[in-house]
Length: 420
Image (spheres, helix red, strand yellow):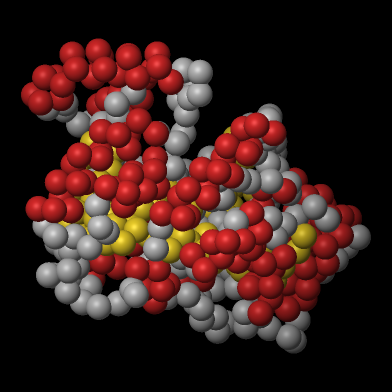
């Protein structure tokens, strides 16, 4: 990627700098890349986002037009211990009048709390056009998260001569998103409109890009599958502590909820313990993050399990680096087919062994090609076999490899999107 402080670009993400939110971490990592390359960047983001990345970066925090979204954003802003400015209060009467009108006119098509944040694109539009002409920006990159970012990019590209790069962190047409036939047709048309307006549209798995190409064969030259990678924090590897030889510790980073859970893992582990498999009783499991499973105490009585309070990202990765193996868990339903958890790239950067309990052939192929361990999240037998293999390698003559190299450099991955 070309280093230049004289080649400014516009970067659009509804979420930036929000602790514990993967969509914000995703955007922040790309901004770190641009800052490291001394690139001048103008960031368009939501009212309650945080200016989290240092560099030649100017943030514009813009409220939504919708009154319901404006209220929600204002509340989030105050909850993050920020004081609303004088100009924010001056804006309230206009936000109320025009925001209420917007909500009234669009309530037939847009539900209250719609995650796309379409109205945000409308308030951002004049600001982005001003920035484009004032600072002679030739490129605009939009990522989400909230699809209002992509809509904003498309609107700007229709009004101005600018190269548009779109990235979808999740497919807007997913296997587990249930819609009426009419609604799905509308979304497919919208996706076609987005791709057609772009210079390049990026999906973050090969399978998602392949599905989009099938839906829009006439636009296949604009559709790309590019793995994002994540920022390398270069944690001090000397801080790793060795667990006692009689224990083997797995650590999972992130929230457990719905079908992304440890149920099948513990069923498999219990079977190994009951069968007297060597060292199965010495397995320990820690989760760094929330547990939103009913009942919430589902794992509390398990002596081998411990829930750790939520840490900031760097501290959480440092904590993970002290374990024996990282756990990567996907949903056991169809939503996993076209997605790869962003934490996967953080895991790769730690250069540690990973046990992936996944439901995605693409992710399974990546993990196994790098000598990590992999099991099907829907199969207790598959998980059981891999735990047995891991324990045999840990305590037997065939040791677990200690050499793992991250295959995705975020600077190189990002350059595939915006460098043309």
